[in-house]
Image (cartoon, rainbow, N blue to C red):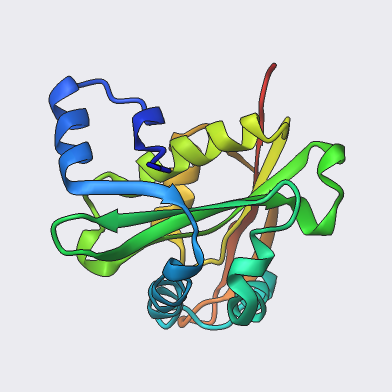
Length: 190
């Protein structure tokens, strides 16, 4: 059985769709993928200080990563490079902050692309499919959380329709206060 959800990705260029399908596979997290996914997430987290709840909660979830995405209203999609034969990223959708999925408020978590695959538009594709999966799971409002160092991610969130709803302050290396968006929201119309 093919669990791939890559066919659900929206491509403006048919050639781009063909090239993506030949090179990458996007499918729900399976037990056999868990260790590889956790390793990619840990590798990505190494470049960020353990700041705020976004990274702390991800680090707490890693020892039982698969189980955390088997809960009702949860899904983790694994991005695999078919040619290299390994996991290169993924993205999760879950109920927001432990809410019941029937509250229709979700969050996108653990969006990660391995360093060698950044800058290829894969993060944007993962965001688009995760928004659709959130809609399929019944979420009408979806949140994202970010740290001040996640500038590329913050830009991506805005480009796909999220808007900042909460800001935090941090003192930067020049002892100046920096204000950055820490939570983003996307309201999904029916």
